[in-house]
Image (cartoon, rainbow, N blue to C red; front, side, top):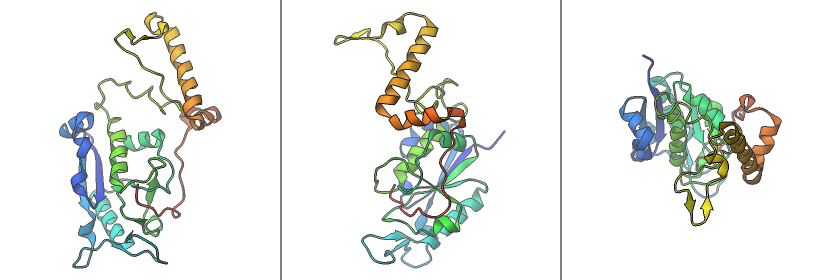
Length: 253
């Protein structure tokens, strides 16, 4: 039997995990051993008596920056415990996380994730270690833990046996390069708003055509960037954007 999907999270706040991942589908899968989770306290890899993990920015400026030597020791320790796992870190300067990349990660053995804090990460960590940056959204968070939780949730739900129906994730937003079609259920009428007649027709061909048309319409209206991308390449050809090492220093996402 293959080893379960594994996540190692390097963080200053291990108490934030599993957090919401301990409930619902992810929590049940964790209890069943379909995936495993460990946290590493970044301060454990400091070498001074104050357990320092940060220092003032070179060149001046506000805030503090996570030290490259401390992060490198933590990443090395996690990699030694779980060799072969990809290393990732959320940062506003990384490429946008995509469902295609999530599927790649979920199909692998797991991931090691570094959750940044303060002003960001010392830039040299991206050159010194094969650390892949990713951006969750165009927002700034207090730290990387929330972004790490989001990535783990996205991966875990795709693991075999986690979702009740095997096709549950196949037609969702982003899977085919489009937003998902709208959904309806009972009651038949709500404050004068009904369910589209086609969904009550029993004509599966017409239903599928309607759903596709609605997905395209909503994508054009709400996410023109996705619509343009879907016109340029088929979903199966979509690849996650990758950037060379270097050029990524922020850790507050």
